[in-house]
Structure formats: C-alpha cells, structure tokens
Length: 80
Image 1 (cartoon, one colour):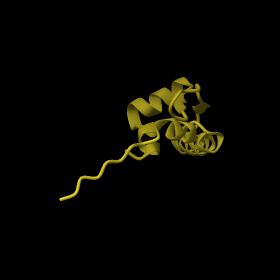
Image 2: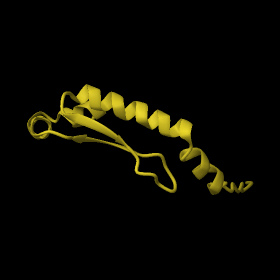
Image 3: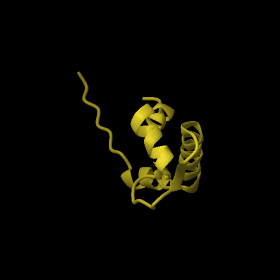
Image 4: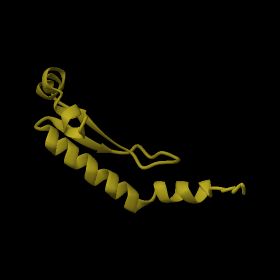
C-alpha cells in the first residue's frame, strides 16, 4: 500500500481566510442572523484576527437579552 503525504500551505490558507471577500461573506451571514433573531440583536464585524475572518451577533438591548434567555431567539436564528 502506498502512503501519500500532503503538505498544507498554511500561509496561503490564512491569506484566503482573512481576505476581504471572505470577511464580506462572514458579514453577510452575521447580518442575516441578527435580522432573523429579531429586534435588539446587532452584528459587529471583526475584530481583525491573524487566521480567520470574524464577526459577532450580540443582544444589544434588555429585551433582546430577555428574548434569548426565555426563547433562545439568537440560538434559533443560528440554527441550533
């Protein structure tokens, strides 16, 4: 049996994963999740990371925090 070795170009992968087009995809998905979760949920892009594009959806108001605590509004919007 033959053994195959694969060497990943981690610098290239990191370049792709932190690129503007990938960040735009993350931003679009985060904005959709925040909208689906309802009023009071906000999407924030970033902060910049060395290896991946990032974004966060958080409950920005008391009502949104209550909706997540009682009805899992954000958790359901993510699809879990």
